[in-house]
Image (cartoon, rainbow, N blue to C red):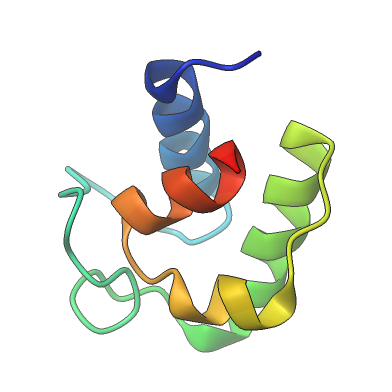
Length: 77
């Protein structure tokens, strides 16, 4: 079982690598509108999350999860 801390660190790593985010990632910032992740990278982020956590994420739920906090919630469930 992953803790929220390990989930958060893993998601941050994916966002930095795949989403090309540099610097701090505030938990409630919109990763697309505020942090500059290009929407074309979203499928790569989704696939990286599914691979890292060995889960399947519903596409519609992923689209709604636009912050670090919401991504952690999505992976945890």
